[in-house]
Length: 361
Image 1 (tube, helix red, strand yellow):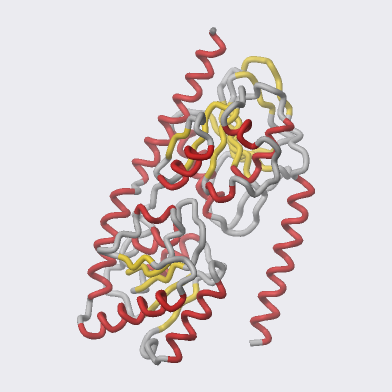
Image 2 (image 1 turned 120 degrees about the vertical axis):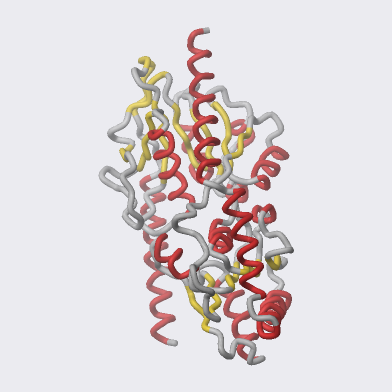
């Protein structure tokens, strides 16, 4: 236990040091802005220099790939020269703010956590706010936030990734133009295993760590987990997570406020019966016919739902798999890569065309 605690402490310290360095680097958005007309309209996605796995950053890289494949020039734009994410395989076009120049006709895409940096851009610089989690909108202490989201002459639009995000932002910023992209789940990676999975329960310990500890210890105390293996998914690559999820039968989702909730959706795609917190945005796929949504913070309700699933599986073998397969069919249909490609391509094509029309006027 001492070694585990020391390891967690070291990770926490490293993360805080990295975040402090990131804050110092991002105090200024020192990017060249020119009034010269661009020869090739390009979309630049400003992206945090985050060296550890992050679903939101992976989405940005994927959207850059989608646009380039569709013939629309796009780059991931990091702060630090030479930085690129190395925790997953990719051939994404990457540059940095010291090397890029924003010209007339280009678009700068800014994540919701970097909204304050917009104040440093010349007035009228065309940009998009890519808000992947509406609950992080107010993370930065920005004066007159509504002006940046609604009454901003340079704002081409707001893009988000869930119905919940769209509704929350639309309620707060009534004048804003908000478009929604349906995130895609890769069926080549996230799909049910060919054989029924063993009695394994997966969860991600970096999410809701204290809730997870309480739920699992309560189940241990009742002897419910006898015969079941609990599999923590931590510090794994994207493909390694998919490999593990194809071997598990149940996934426990510990979260609070999500922008979408990729981990439980990917677990469903792999045929897991998912129990846990939808984080509000996940309500659109946490359907009671094939999952067990639990109110955030309800430890007893969470543990009881896990017990019910295990007992149902004991009395009716295949109970979890049947529901997991139904969940897989739903999420792989609703969140297909083809739908994501169509959304991303159409939205950015429309925004770039709108910019071109404005310039002609």
